[in-house]
Length: 200
Length: 200
Image (cartoon, rainbow over all chains, first blue to last red; front, side):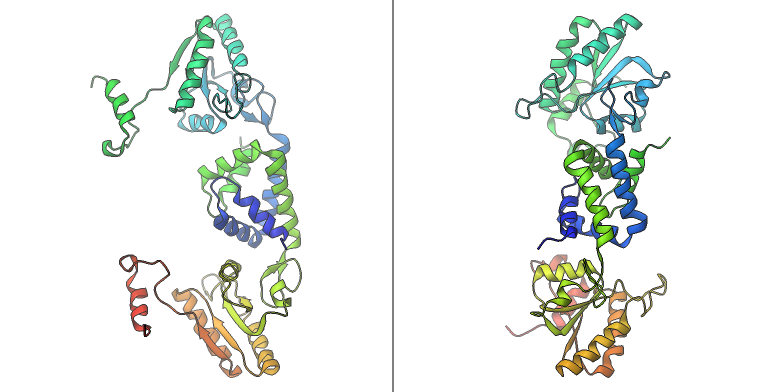
């Protein structure tokens, strides 16, 4: 017979990064810290599940209909960085290298997974870009999808859709990661790094 | 300003097996599966936090004051396996090599962490052992604490306390783990495996 504890462990094991073994450890840890961890965690989860929503503008997760990045007047609203998901947005924000706005696709184009241009909000992105050209006369869309086949296909599709807007379209540089050692690098990256080499 | 989502991620990162990076991934996964994962998980957590308690007999976690192992008449109630925590009990049950009952210490003796004989329920273990000798005339206490200094110190302390009961006291064998390769093994284990060698 399965107890509620078994159910909880099974559900914890479905979280990315946790397996059956670590789910059991996590469940025990929670039980040993009921008042300080287990009950607050459950409450916070319920709270976040009800409060957090997608920004109507960019697709970011926030407590309001428009996210804090889209509402921030100090950011450069003439630049949109197109990324696959919110985790990428968080990574960009942690790096602190971009002060514009975002468009979160929520994945890449995929016939298999039934994700077409509508699911990725590409019409919304085109409309925002058109508005940028009206408001600022110039703008930039940075295609920062993954360096995978799906990511690059999606980037090319978006670039085509944006061509009529006459906006500047850029993509992230490819090359050696910081701290990367040559002998651990795949040939594709090495080839790109060589082709895009710069003067010292 | 910290949002409820930040709080949730920080709390998830405190779970064993999750770090800041995987906590973010887990939080995103939960948000993307609110109805099927996030809300049920929060509910199950609340449910378990309120329902699960320690068995008054052995310290195991269960829904009732006496756990299903202590209540199971098909198990050998003349044998007690002493383990450090519930995770060890689960490991023993998965291995299916022991059909007796348990005593969950909840840790090892540690002056530093303020865990003395009372915290480990050693008096309760002695009383259970005395009762076994009355009911069954013979019995066995298997000391299955970890092969660490603390684990072995605790085992010796318990063995001393149980001596007046005249119960059979055993401990788990030390040696080569199954599938273990000699060249990866520490010298301590190798020495124990050599000393305890058996005839082929």
